[in-house]
Length: 74
Image 1 (spheres, rainbow, N blue to C red):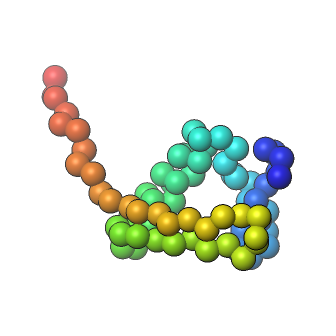
Image 2: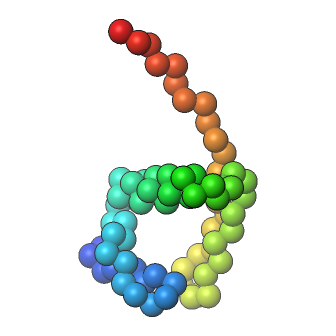
Image 3: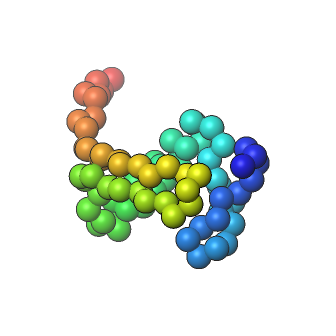
C-alpha cells in the first residue's frame, strides 16, 4: 500500500482521512475517541482488531483513561 492510498471503510467506501504517519494516526484516533465519548460509548478496556486479510496483522488495543495534568490558572 502506498502512503497516499485511501483505506476502505467497512462498507467498502474509501476513507478520505486515512493516516499516513504517526501524527495523522494520533489525530484520527483522537477524533474517534472524542466522538465515542460524546455518544456515551464505553471505550475503556481491551479491544481486539481482527483482520481477515493475511497480510495485515491483528491487534490488541488497551484503552485506559488518564488523569489530566494540573492546570495552573493565571
